[in-house]
Length: 390
Image 1 (cartoon, helix red, strand yellow):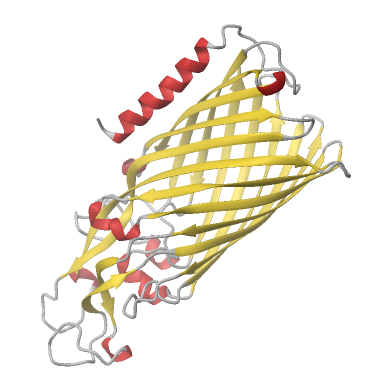
Image 2 (cartoon, helix red, strand yellow; image 1 turned 90 degrees about the horizontal axis):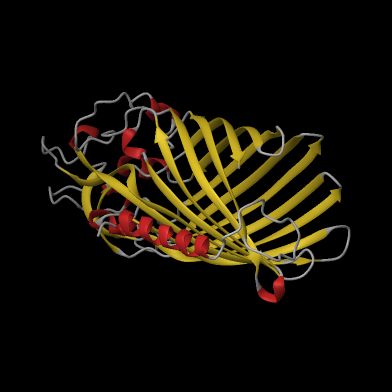
């Protein structure tokens, strides 16, 4: 059975099981105590303009014009920018859990429709379970699944057709990389009883997988995070967060392009050590540690709500392989700034407007460019979404 079909069956099974236990329809109760099972479905759709779907450097975005032949770096990449419409269906179930306190289960299914980059289209799945424990405290479990779909093209080999020792861009062979992601998370919110503050501690597991030819790029490992939640008034909230992930990749052989003078070695066997971008087969290791610091501000104004956020993410790669020029000593840093407005248009309809800008710098730009890895980039996204709760 295909992986995507299996996931659909599992999610459908969870929904069916919970529905059988929730015979009474109506609005989900808002208090910590619940006396009967109820549910409230919702439907949301969001249209987002993304000016850099594939996270390319500015000078490479113009190369994505559509119609690139198979095996080239930009195959299946029809446009560097796109309009992505995400549609989600959510069922919010709630009823008595441990000690009669509110237990909620929220399965959802979504579909991401790329207007131009059709290979990026696909389903997403998720489920959240929250158990209220004491006033202001709760245990939450979540799972998010993104089945395999086209991500981008990565270098798989190179052929020195003119035998000059240097691999030029037209001599590089790329393959289509399909990426699947799974995120499992659990957290507990502690009420600190002072100035409306709370502390949320959590951890989980992240997994990213490709098809066999890109197995070296698979990542998996534990995650941890902490958030300080501050209520500064009836309608003002300030949050600070820190997260960390230790992600391990398999060490394996891969084709890389190296500058021979940097190592004093004849990688391509032509009797010289002066070739630039020479083809070599070397051990690579994509393992890394990710850390992120974030802050967000939220304030209500009647039926409107203002949201502002900032995050800085760093990645430190662990590779100690001497010829792994794309990962050995690599450090990435990304800053992200976003903001938006949410409007409650009655009890059932919610409108959301958002804008976000992010910029990343990499200290190994030249080495990352030939393989297709993410290098320096800037990205801007603007979206408008509408949610209807039945």
